[in-house]
Length: 273
Ligand SMILES: C[S@@+](CC[C@H](N)C(=O)[O-])C[C@H]1O[C@@H](n2cnc3c(N)ncnc32)[C@H](O)[C@@H]1O
Image (cartoon, rainbow, N blue to C red):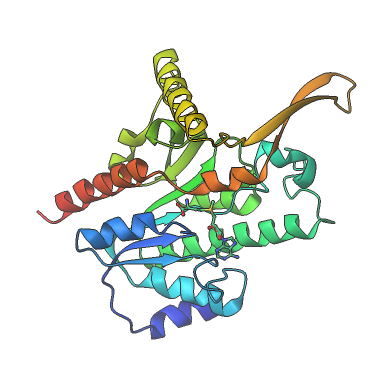
């Protein structure tokens, strides 16, 4: 920590970034900021191999972007969730009494390192630039919030609220209940409830979409399969397992990105008066 504090003291970059889109395969959030004339930076290992939060140089590249955030800038972190969610329980084997999961599995260890480095990065951003708005996103049920370092993070930065929304109501092809942990004041407007009417509307949209696909000779994608097995307690349980199409649902739908930008823009405008 002493090294990083010294690094911050010596850091001489300009603080003009309005959006740091961390883990941004689609780059949609960074793009909408840029479209409205606000400088933005997207970071993702799939865009550039050097942008690896697990490597030392990749971590510093992310830290530099964080330090470049202007007061009231937004950092949105969509940390990889695939090995924290219930659908991959059989692989990660995380439980409330063993949140680190199956450490004999390399991918589980890697997911833990990505999550802990993300948490350290976000803590540093808030300590060094306390006027930053953060949105940290994970699917509902993710174990990530239960990791010791995230628990400590939310104890230290207590101004965070948890907003439940459903990406399916913003145009995604899966309902995907999602938690946003955020200190962005107007983010409550992103909350959505899974009312019967909203679920029916979503089902109708998907029915029409699948009908159009079939007419065009395409099979609608399957995102997960269900099966029943006997749990360790001998009680039959319905299990889900993701298919390879599931990873396509990681990208934020455009309507969600537009709403998040609008939230930030309204907050930012109020701070400029
Ligand atoms: C859940 S997706 C987020 C996608 C985002 N919601 C969007 O709209 O583009 C997580 C992203 O983390 C990236 N990622 C995974 N491991 C990483 C690493 N070690 N360093 C940086 N990015 C990584 C993946 O490439 C993936 O795009």
